[in-house]
Image (cartoon, rainbow, N blue to C red; front, side, top):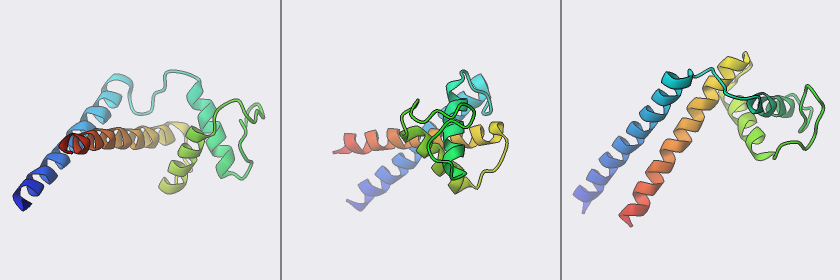
Length: 117
């Protein structure tokens, strides 16, 4: 039984690391880790910065309060706070893409464990 668990643990590490490598590699190769495709990223970043600055949930450029749902800006604010990021937008974006890649790879891991059941 412990041998099966050991094999399962090794497989889960391999799945997670492979999934993470694919996601970070894709983001880096096709887009660059500091590149965005649309203007939504700037708005989400602005909401997250406002939350961290104590300005509440608002777009710093336009003063909008409820243009976007609050979940993702709160997620970004948590990443910024945890990583200690007080950096230019491109550096913040790189950290966010890596964090999203980790979460996405963890999703593959959860699917693997569901399949074991």
